[in-house]
Amino acid sequence: MTRQSAASKSHDVAIIGCGLMGSALARVLAGNGHSVVAWNRTPARSEALVPYGITPLESAAEAVAAASLVIACTSTYDSTRSSLEAAKRWDGTTLVNLATGTREEAEQMQRWTRERGGEYLDGAIFCYPREVGAPEAKFLFSGAESTWSRYTTTLQLFGGDVAFVSPQAGLANVILMGTAAFYIPAICSYVEAATYMVSQGLAIEAARASTLHALDNLRNVTEEVFAAIESGDHADDQATLDTYAEGLRTVQGQLRRVGQRAPILDAAMGQVEEARDAGLAELGISAQSKLLRS
Image (cartoon, rainbow, N blue to C red; front, top):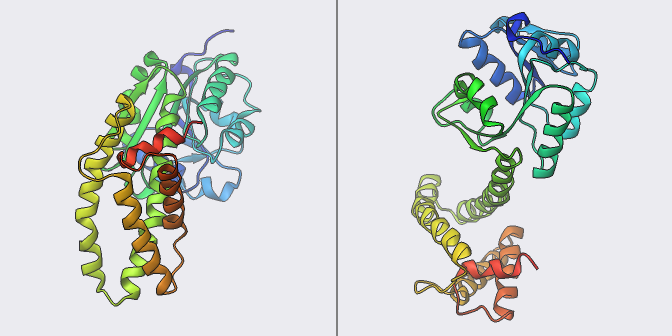
C-alpha cells in the first residue's frame, strides 16, 4: 500500500465524535493554531463548532482522508469502529482512540488500524471537558512510542498532565479501568456521606471542611495499599480489618436509624465481613485483596 504523506492532507487533525469531550478537544486544537475538521453522527454537533474555525464534514471517511491525525472520541470501541468502517485508506494516518473500554478492545483496535495501513495510539481520559487545555487535565496514552513521539506536542495541548505510559496499547485503559473502579464508587459514597451530614443539620461549609482531612488520609492509604498488594504483606499496626468492620457497623446502624439508604456503605460492609469470615480480621484493610482474584 502506498503511504500518503502528511503534507498531502488538507488539515492537521480530524475529530470523530463531537460530544462534550470531543468538542472540547476540537476547540483546544483549533485555538492553538491547528486546522481541524470534525464529524459527528448528528451533524448539528459538528456544525456547532464552525464559530471556532472548525470545518464540519459529512462523513467520517472524508475526515480520515482529510487529516494525518484522527482523534476518535466516541463512547465505546464498537462505536468508534462502526463510525470509521467506511474509511478504507489509512496510509499516512494515525488513529488516536479515546473511547472507554477494555485492554483487549484496545489491542483489537490497534490490529484493526494496522491492518488498514494506519498507526495507532490508545488514550484514556481522566478529566472533565471543562478541564481540557488546562493544567488540571489528565490524559494517558499507550501504543507505539515512535507514534507518540510524532504527536507528543499536539496531544500535550490537551492539558498539564499528558503522558505516554507503555508501548503495550492496552495499558492506558488498564489504568483507566482501575481508576474508574475506585473513583466512581468513591463519588457515590461521598454523596451518601454528604446527604447524611446535611440531613442532620450540619452547615454545608462545615460538612465540606470535615472531609478534607479524610481525603488527605486517603492519599496516604492508597500508597500503603499498593505496597501491601505488591509485597503480599498485609499486616497493619495502625488499624486492622476488624477495626474497620466495627466502624462500618456503627455508621451503617446510624444511617439506618435516620432512614437513609447507603448502598455503597452496605457493599463495603459486606466486603469487610467476608474478609473477616475468611480469617483476615487481624490484618489490614488491604487484605481484602486476597479474596478478589479467586
